[in-house]
Image (tube, rainbow, N blue to C red; front, side, top):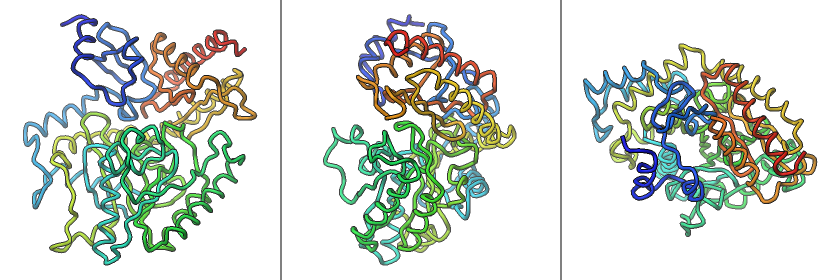
Length: 452
């Protein structure tokens, strides 16, 4: 096998990384070669505790023999045939049946794709064609939240409320409008959480009235904000208010649960916390356990039935959507979640992890701990009372991340927001290790940057 330097040189020459960070690539590129449970090993034999579940995917951990066996069995029978035209495969049927079983409400019809961006793209196209087929062809606009990430395709990028993701690709597609989020990011409006949620609902209501309900196809939103902003949790009033607003005006409600679905919040789906059911829900990442690329947009019979007549078929698809072997892997991933009661474990370990993170308020730069279940964030601030940011932004957060790597732990940061989203299999001992290493890095950071 080539040595580390040779592999790094080949990678730099031939591989464009997804959402690359060139400064880090120049200084400390990593090449991972093996995984087991919550741990990874690099090509030089170093072991790391993965606190972000490989971008929120490996919810059952790495190297599950049950999933390997399911994939091998399916490949020996039929590795792939497209879910296309008039052809189904057995794993796609069985997976769709399983999704209908675990989904909230009457969400029971699945459009299976390869990734979260494809799922959200499909959901928005589904909403637009739904109104086309029902004779309401002026309903084309999509409403989305500021500071939410929806995806990387041109359509989902246009529904993303974080400028960094689209500013180099302008102009964005027309027909996307944004409303204020229900959380008070750095108290930008001078509001507490309850008042911020009320203002957001008023802002959304006003936007619906301003644009005209007859022009609106859907509202797409993450029930809990993603890792980019650190898992803000909405109020029940906001969640029910959005559902009521959609019902009042006949707007389809899309919940993006690509990050937070399949047990990550301590319930099967994030929206279960408020008993609010969308018209379309999108899932990905942990849905397939990270073993093969898979995601889905799942809708109700009421929406799906409009595509059931000749001439009204859903005009959308991908070659590898509903991939035969990926469906088999996802089925076994869901079976493990059920057998090992991992949703319940996420709820219990999430409470324990939050308690341990809140103990870190003893460090002056620990400004805010938030989240739900096993999606939690710790934001570093100069002053937690005033929400004053550290300057320059991201310097200390990135230093803490890099120090954790040196200590043998993979920590995700978004500037000064440290995010924790480990596998659902996590134990108390692994929580203690994760928080202990984080605390060591924080303590050293306070000393290094004079924040004691």
